[in-house]
Length: 291
Image (tube, rainbow, N blue to C red; front, side, top):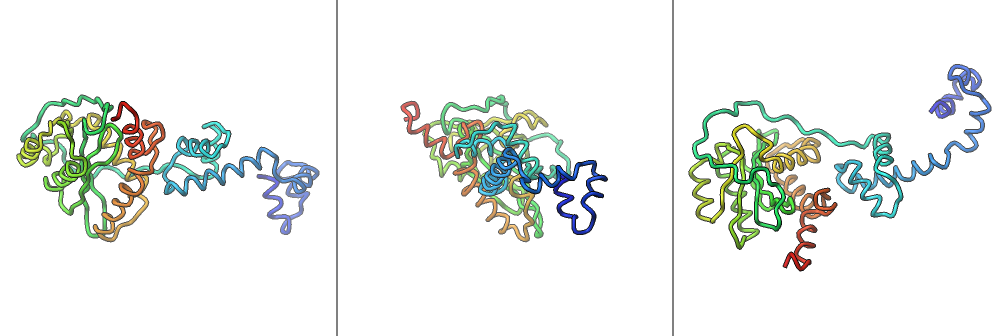
């Protein structure tokens, strides 16, 4: 870094004066000019470009662990710590989602049920257990409310809905989309928190009519629905926080692109052995156990 500074400013200041101020030898500077990058520095530079390309292909959302996996897929030999160092030096880092909307979250639910899921977030097959939740997205028109349904087997978003109001209908539409898309052959456990949308008579009636078993988090315990919370954190960190939406329709189009074009078919998950949700399900079906 000192030699680079001297080279950049040598037309303005004396080289010997700058070497004296920076406490380096002029002979060292002239040697650096002939071969400014060591072999290790050249390798760092080459792999940094590969990392930057993989990061860009992911929509600039992957952290160093998934980038290390991408480099391994390319046949590059490097350890995760090296990738972490190169990403840090290149300014490649994860972003943090915005905070939960202020408000009151107390009150007595109308129709609460037991926490049957009980934090058992690993399902042995698709369509055995789904989790659902709702969040908000800022736009210039006001808030848009997004409800999702996630299959615990593959972490695939199997249903989602966005509306302008935070009503029971938005979560019902997401669940209806999941039922229509998956057409489960057996009874599915559907886990939610105790928000008003999930404790309504309409929600309970829908679950009963479609032979879905309800489960609810304990009151005020977000960790009981950690998978849904984790997905919303990813969505906001990797996409929403980096955008400014003028309209709710613009936000809806971007959420569609994230879920249907990136998250489900492409985004790697460490839990899935670095496979996307769709690919994880495909490989499960291709095995004798998945038939």
